[in-house]
Length: 433
View 1 (tube, rainbow, N blue to C red):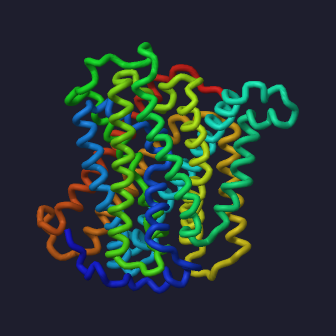
View 2: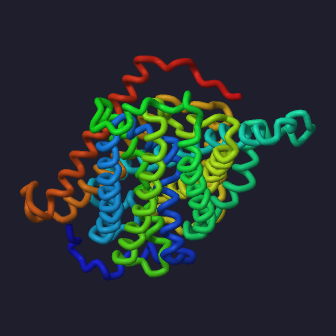
View 3: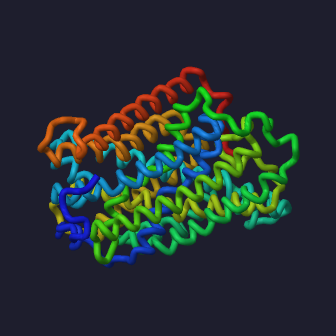
């Protein structure tokens, strides 16, 4: 579906250019977007598990289809920015739906990004200390050094020494090197699962007759998992604005390459793991492997490291939401920038320190926020901005109508599935170790 304006034309958003301290190249933006899409989604929301729920062939079709939808809706947000003359997601919703739209998108953006920050901190605490303990079992007996096996100490160390300095940048393109490092770590994880999967003991493998199923009853849960894993829409305009020459053509290239990289990684991870573990596939695929597997421990360590380089991407969104909602007409303040960065980061760190399971709250806010930001809001804003032909089935409007309807369906399913888990009760409470 074509945009009403020429796609090669520079987007005329003067405030966006003024706010950019220094732009980055296309490779920088590709690294940031691919890292934002992959993040914890490839493992933490387990795409192999999604295949076990949807069925092998149906799961693959869903992965490919939702990657195309993601690609389109990411670009649709920038098209909406051009049509509305606004430079932020909040500004677009405000232009289209007034104060209620402004409040809704602000809440969902902040909830999704802050929830991700908390989850990333928990993942750091759950992976790095355990890997260090398994590699250096005698470390726990050595004074001072045994702190490296302590969950709380590792979370504080990683957050303060790595995530905090990265979060203080104003220009998101400055995170491209950290994102590139995270992507290399993600490739290590995918490679580790691909190589080690066939070599696990037979008792850990799933039944072979469940391997190549067509479709399974839990398909709707799989749709929610895959949709959640591909969401990066909350920082798409930040990435767009980090380009030295922001045009729709250049951003289209960034989006195509980023989603393609993400799809390849997701398919490789999902297929290679599922054909081994089938119905035994766990929510975190790395938990399917033995604790003493050296290569998988390297993957676990990389997964933990990726989290504190991905966390600043989410903080950029939280900070931008506050700036846009409360201080959109004020000039930049260094003191305010440091205050918000510090407050948001250390608040998420505190939550990560005191809990090991964000539970049903994060599932509900994450699922609802993800579908609203990725599918519903971009589509309804576009429908509002193009006006003209009111027929919902017209060629220009139909894709957006279908996208909004799909988003509404996924949102309802996410809520129902999360509430069902809540009512059924969890199998024991997770405790920090």
